[in-house]
Amino acid sequence: MTDPTFATRPDPARAAERDRDLKLLLAVLLALLGVTMTAIYALALNAGAAPRLADLALARVPQTGVDNPVTAVLLNYRAYDTLMELAVLLAALLGIWSLGPAPAGFQRSGPVLAGMVSWVVPLLIVAGGYMLWVGGYAPGGAFQAGALLGAAGVIVRLAGDPQAGLPGEAAQRWLLVLGVLVFTLVGLGLMLFGAGFLTYPPKLAKWLILLIESAATLAIGVALAAAYVGGRPTATSPLDPRPSAQPK
Amino acid sequence: MTQLVLLLLFDAVLLITLLGLALAAVLSPEPRRAVMLFIAFGLWLALVWARLHAPDVALAEAAIGAGLGGALMLAAARRAARARRQDAEAEP
Image (cartoon, rainbow over all chains, first blue to last red; front, side, top):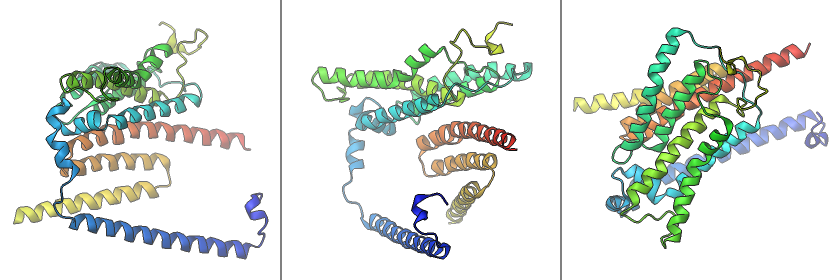
């Protein structure tokens, strides 16, 4: 072995012994973790009906601008978390892009699949819009809507478009940062008007949340579809030799 | 009473299948097979969330966890297999 940590211990018997000790230690630690978690679970079960944060949060839902408690938590009470989630998604896509240019796409679909795609993709886009709107008062919201848009992109790429139906690289970059950008601008704007960062005034809350969610939906959809493409877009390069970039 | 027992039975089947799918996905040696089992696991988990009266989480799990995550992992498995094949060709 060339590993320097093992170079000082050439004896295989001692290495095996150490290996066994490590496994034993791991088992003991895991057992302790299991006991602790069971104890916490039992404590939580027996805690009874003490006053909890949920009651307070539910009572204030009418002031958040939305009727769906889940959306209220995601975009009002804990808007910071959602902003960070969008930033994480953006960082993940930057990681994928840093791996290199996108691999070549699939072969062009035949007429049957192309016909199905031309039905399913508009349906997915409409369903995404519905999901975004319905999130205000029923299960739904920006992430689910964005996932539907991303699924439309995956289908378009599977059907033969190497760019998954996305626009050129410059437009893609703007769409990708749109979620974080609008979110942050709304937060900073609210700070200018005296409220805290992302503390919406109740009268405007609904429209601000809808604005943020619309931008987030677009950004999430583009990010997921671009992640499926799996690399930096290359279609904007005039030197691109891919055959599908040429007109038939 | 029978309704309660039936529901309990349904929940038990849900949970046991979920654990079985999770174990099968983790223990599967072949990446492609593991990803397919993971997608099945995600869809099953969406059912469990719906049973727990959490439709928001169920929707997100089905759309993002099973659907898009599965598609991304299938693409990654395909690329990994291609890279392995190229390495094997370059070796001898």
